[in-house]
Length: 555
Image (cartoon, rainbow, N blue to C red; front, side, top):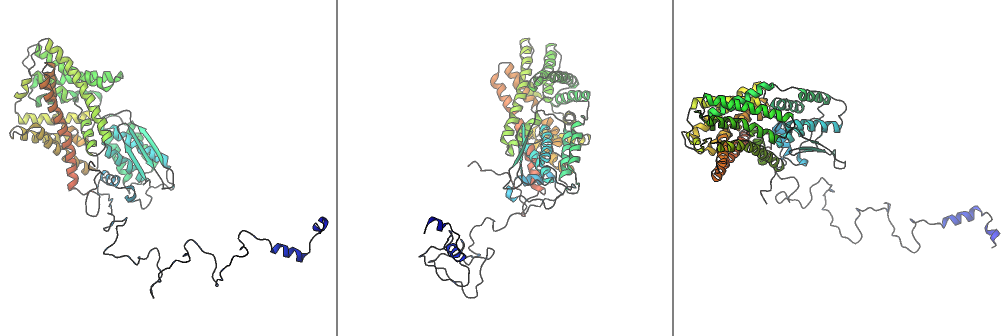
């Protein structure tokens, strides 16, 4: 056939024959035997049983199983370990009749997969708020709490409560000494969203702290229906609010605190006035240094000098007065008891980085006080001042006067912490009870000061936790000021005096005693708070147990 004939159009019969010979990749090649099938489709799947594999036939009358039917080899008595424990997953009852701190702390101590999710959307907004705005509100609230001296665990609980109130269940807050961060992941397949905020300024304003706690309580309440805009408005009002006490009241409270502390260690009226004047002068100098932008270390150094200078001046003037009581009273107004308690509490609850940073801050402030007092005592000794460390052993026992002085000290301490007026009376009585317990155990009972201080501080923590639960507020306003009478002011002073007189061994022993007393206070307050949780209803499992922090027990 020629090339022209090949290009001629073919007939319909020839074209059909040609098309029938065209094959595809799905056609069966020639020579391949195909088994004859029945009426069923020849298509198989990955679940089909391969040829040559014997499958046991089901017994007569046995129905075909499914993914939800019990396997034939299952035995209830010899059940293998499963992901769900035999007793079931404990149900967490997040009722409203317990403080939100306990509810959120219980949630944080649970694995993420076991945390109960919100059943319904609680907020009144038809459209859910933007996740970045919720995280920003959460970080701002956490910043105010951490700057106010709240413990890291309570700050995390507050941040988790805010996020959960707006439906963000899969969130993880993280708190350190200066950095707050929170991460939210909508689901396992979505990218997480993380935000952070740095805490640069700190202040002692327990009125603002109580307002933030009330805001978190309203947010976590299912009946409040607080919108995001309303929460931002209230947070702005909290930040703009002025301190409840003017500056002159704070200065006067500092002087009264020093005077009450001097009476507590055996001083008389003249000692009271001298200690008050020295503390007020030191407070004004510290305010001046703060206005000039000097670090807090130098502020404490300058504030510790006037009380020591007045005590040395009275000794050089041969005035019949206890100079040690004057200097000790001035030290009581400067010792960082609030930061110490918060640091030890963070360490006991597992926040070791934050605890180390807080305790390092306490050490720096204490060193600043030591430098200020030592400089004055050194020059006083060089000038011939007769300062005798043995006067620490001649503290007179005046129960009624000392109880009154301890209550005055707690009251003025509460004013310095900017507490609400409604909490001042309670913390004053709590401080009086603490000193009564310490005095009864130490003086008539002859028990060591460290043990007596620990027991008294434990009662302070217990009563403070009960009062805070009664008012659904923070426990700090009811405990921090109440430990004021227990602070180791006299042990600190006599240790510094011994070092100034070149008796380093005796000075180190006295400063070690002061450190032991400080640790006894901090551990006692935390232990009292934990004891209160043992006897009060706390959200937990069906057995009533309290979920503790996850630890490896040192392994």
